Length: 389
Image (cartoon, rainbow, N blue to C red; front, side, top):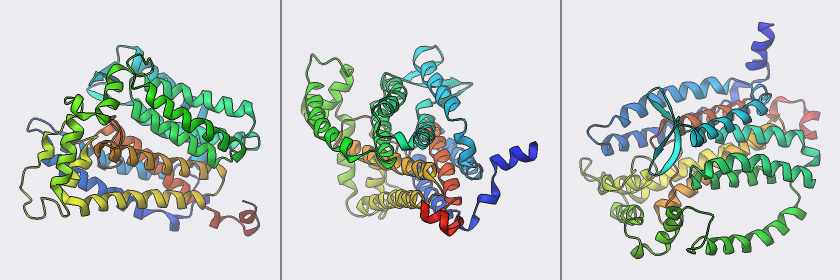
């Protein structure tokens, strides 16, 4: 029995270690080093974020390697319990005394002396859940009942995150859900009419939430949108983004650290610089060149994830890898969009770079699952079966 269970969890007979993506581990390690160098210089004297980040990265890499050896099919068997565990954690976060608040948002659970952000775990849980769900209903994906059920199942956790409030994670999760729905085979007969209705509806929604009488967003969320559009009218709310833009411009082409590695960065005065706004410090310290290196590294990670999706052994593996690629892409877009004032100020970490143990653990779990999908690919299937996929 134990041998059978071990084989179900670590299905080495189905793995091709030649396709283990060591390059992805190298990419996230480089990104981690860049982040830790900046965190060490930016943290206050009484903080220990740098030390926590080092420990978090070391533990995270071990977690990623271990998870990469666990068959994603075994994990997906528990997709329903995982879904309800996720819902329970989000409810506890918002509606019980265990939930902790920072910056007017209740997003954390206190476990001992450590604060954990359940919404960071929601990302990988929902990707696995949706991949398994879409795999089950694959042949009925365009039925109205299936579409409605999928929307309900996704809206529940997104709503619980939205009311924390956490607008950025809600948006990223919903965008990832739409990408996975498309990859699952949603018909263009549904997509095109939805876009025809959805785009004008979004424009109307964007106008509506700017009005004083709107009831969808909290006042401070509405004011953040207005601060992006009219920073001169909301100097306090626009402070982060205005100063972030100044720091980015100050970095120039090559950054300040090329000529003087000991220079104090102006970015150190930007609130939450070590987390949501760390791209500001990257731009000031390493300039346009350094910023592009970070972006290119993350784009390579996304490209490799999509390549893994294309070569995945089965439909569920393809959806998991596509979901991870989509979520990473949206996180990158939102983070840099906020820092450069293209989007309202709604914080989300830069993947594998920003400080924050919950986000780091969530990213490492996603990386581990992605690596396991890469170990099981079409090259290992008989030629006849490969063609049928």
